[in-house]
Image (cartoon, rainbow, N blue to C red):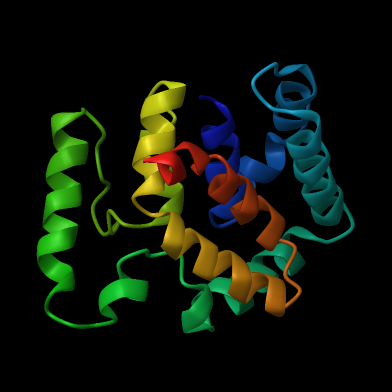
Length: 171
């Protein structure tokens, strides 16, 4: 599910590599058959928002959104445990899952970071991705709600992730 790779890149820190490859992202989104029209519009609107800002402006907006406001934190276990000791075992379990699946967590990276989780989810088939995301849907919804309240352009991208976990609701 390559949409998750796209979302991972767009909600991760906007580095030079992303900015240099936006044309490829746009081309992929336009041509993709796995991304529905509503999702395409949302992604293209976000990319358009990026286009009216400088790289430094986008980076500043990212830091102000995700690094300065705990309610927007993209580290999912933060929303469950905060800085409690219970967070450690959850992070270890997630690290072990990624390792078993061949996904390398880079040194200094925390495995519950939503863009990293989306990289993993991109390796799953549609049903597996929906089930996996179903396990974190409540947290994703909280983040999206908080971003909506702050009128952040990132909110709609997070809503795509939330909507792609809907099959878990039927269980």
